[in-house]
Image 1 (spheres, rainbow, N blue to C red):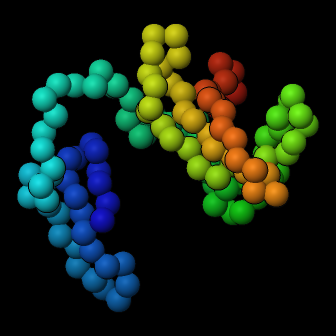
Image 2 (image 1 turned 180 degrees about the vertical axis):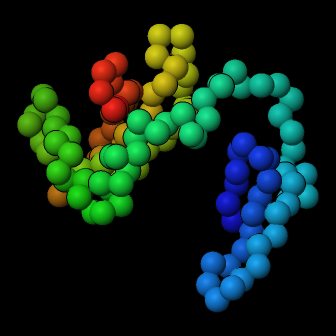
Length: 119
């Protein structure tokens, strides 16, 4: 199932051998409308600044991104991001990056786009 936040539909389908897809509204699958807005105006498309990082991760090359704990010197590889979790007036565009060492130690950092460059 795939949720498209912009269109407010759920698309269900099988991706092999010419399968069909079916679009359902949130009400049709039992989702209830929010009683009030979260105030978070960020959309998934607003996080394009993570695109190159996500592509590197998808190629299993996360260890080349240079994620280093400055306090310990430990090298980390990104595992996943949580976007849109904490918009605020000082940094509305940020994400939580969860990382792991080769010894499976986990940590996380708040990340945000660079003011210059592509991200």
